Each structure stands twice: as C-alpha cells, then as structure tokens.
Length: 301
Ligand code: MLT
Ligand code: MN
Ligand code: ZN
Image 1 (cartoon, rainbow, N blue to C red):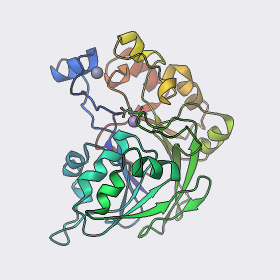
Image 2 (image 1 turned 180 degrees about the horizontal axis):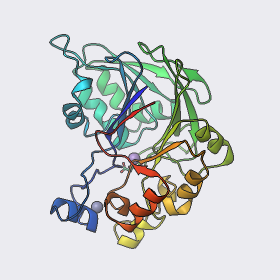
Image 3 (image 1 turned 60 degrees about the vertical axis):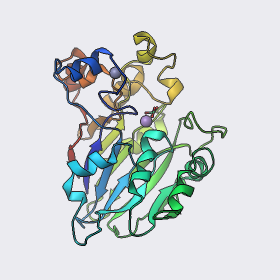
C-alpha cells in the first residue's frame, strides 16, 4: 500500500492567506525553518499504480495534483489516476476540492457517511452542483462495516465513528458518523494504516484499533488546547473544534503504542509550533519518534 500526503495542513493551510501569527509571518518572510503545507488530503493505492483513492478533496487540490504527477497517468486526452473518493467528514477543507474535479469524464464514485452526504446536499449542496457537471456515484459508508472501492480489490477499508463535530456551516444536530477515521488494510500483506485527521478524544477502543495498525496518521492540529485563544486569533479551543491537542493527550496515547508502530501527525494547524523544524516542541516529538507529515511525504506499508 502506498500513501501519498498531498496536503498536511489543517483548514487555512500554512501559511494561511490572512494570518500573521509567528509561524505564518515567519514562513512568508522566509525567516523560519519550516515548510509551507497545503490543506488536508491524502491519496492511497494498492498494487495498481493507476488506481488511487483520494481521501478528502482539499481546496488546494489543483496544486496538489500538479505536485504529484503520479496521479496523472496520461493515458488519454482526459485522464486521471484518481478512481475513487472517500470523505472522512464534510468540512470545507475536506470537500471544497470536489468542485475542482467537475471536468471528470464519468461520475465520481464518492464514499461518505449519511451525515456527510446530508451536509453536502442540504447546508452546502455541492453534490447537487456536481450532478450538473460530471455527476456523483454516491457510495454509502456505514461505520463499523468493511468496504472495497472499485479497481482496488487488494485494499479493504473500515470506517470508525470518532468523537467530533459537524462543520460550523452544518444545520444538523451532531450525530455519530459526523467524523470518521479509516482503517485501510492491504489484504496481501495485512499491513494496516489508521487514518484519523480529526479526533476529539481517544478511548481504549480506538486505541486498540490504532495498535492494530503498522502506521497511524492522526490529528496533529494543535499543540495545546488553548492555542488559538492564547494567540488571540479565536475564542475556540481545540476541543470545541473536535481536535485532541498533542499536549492534551495525543502524545501520551502515541507513546503507548507498540514500539514498531509508525506515528505520524497530520492536519497541522498553521499556529502549531511543531511546524518549525528547530523548535523545542518538534524536538520533543522527535525524541518520542513521532513524525510530522509534510506535502509530498510517501508512506509505503
Ligand atoms: C477543522 O478541522 O477544524 C478545520 O480545519 C477547520 C476549517 O476547515 O476551517
Ligand atoms: Mn480540517
Ligand atoms: Zn498563522
């Protein structure tokens, strides 16, 4: 199984267009040892090099496709290496890129929960919009059940319901299935990835699932729960936004994983000090063998 990190930042990206926090200002002025990152998305494939599944469709998808030519195999005048799309929630940073994929020559097989489908057809009806372009072939994700996407029989997927929140624009009441994590298993090798870019809390049940994976690619949004409040850029805490901060428990959970598990933080907010390569926070992660995802990172399991 090949996993390509297309975008490792949270909503807003790094630097964020209107942000002058020490990180965004510093990287914009090229004063910091830090890499810019686009908004949250990954792509996964099994043996077939031309059958990628896009997991979340970022507002930055066009730049991400340009930066990852393996997703454009060029077999016909109109072509793509993306065969399927899977969504982990209906947040703006995970779905806006769908509109940029409207020139597709066939309806997109789109896997999402009923919760996400409701948001994307009612509060933010971009799937209705897409029906007037390439069309959508909606596939239902039921949490707890395994599924296989078309063209990738060697991978199987399981959605796990995670504690989280519906997006701010949603008019629905919060419900189980608003945010999912994914277990992706290569059936040839039984290697597993656990992908959870947004998770508000970890319990022993989720920890067991994480422990069953060779690699966990998990919520790296915030270093502290009050990061945005302390910087004075928002009144929202990490927990209010459905994110478990690194110092609020994530590091402790990752420390308890089996020694061989690869631990990678993703969906990193631009305010997070771990983005700075020579920061003390980053050194603390390195001591614990916790990696920080970056655009273009490839993980092979
Ligand atoms: C989140 O996951 O909380 C988002 O990144 C917020 C956003 O997209 O603005
Ligand atoms: Mn997000
Ligand atoms: Zn910033």
